[in-house]
Image (tube, rainbow, N blue to C red; front, side, top):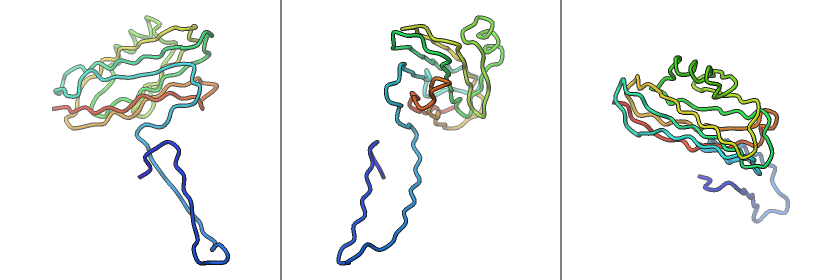
Length: 165
């Protein structure tokens, strides 16, 4: 029930001379974690539609922009692929051949795109065509970008929903 990024919890003891020993354990989840401070880039993903039929191609736009006046070393994009949709291997090969990124990896439900560098004020746009394969309602998990050698400065992209019929 915490509704902001600066939660504060206080424990008060009333009517006692000394505080009673206590222990508190807190666990939380967030669909959209907070962005790192002073990120030298912006990042966004967008699924082109909220509804699709089985067999349709669904476009996912991925954009990374260097907002600084210096080159960024080793930026990475981790794109969460919605359940019910799949990447197209032929497209990943084509994008690799066209050098749209330096290399990619497939993690559990994610596509990870690596770049050696991102020039000052440069923009990288990846257009992924995902195939709708399994009917259902799905939430697209948050995707994120960061610098390989400085992963505390992450930029997150808000989760989206999609229904496949």
